[in-house]
Length: 144
View (spheres, rainbow, N blue to C red):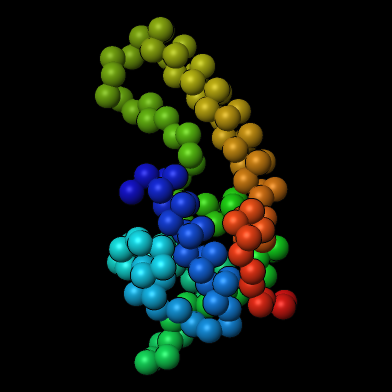
């Protein structure tokens, strides 16, 4: 799954958790609403449990619930919980013959991608789950 698809899926899941808060939601319930396979949702939510964005309750009435208010959750935080590398990752391994030109290209693109990454992270750190809820006219009963 691409990084953008993971982020989209994670945000869709969190929007549903915000809307249904404080009732725990199973991955099957989230899947039914989002149309995204429950195994993909479970995998992403498990990363967000480790990152403390959501918690997981076991049992018949268990499921996932938000740990933070939507206004306290940024896209950047979500992305960092679900993705293990930067959005603009450049693999400059030893696959290619090393030459001065290759080294110059690598240096150029590493710098370029680093600048783009900083801009992406800056933008994502300013967008909250509350902003997304508002954009789609969604509400939450989260009071924290």
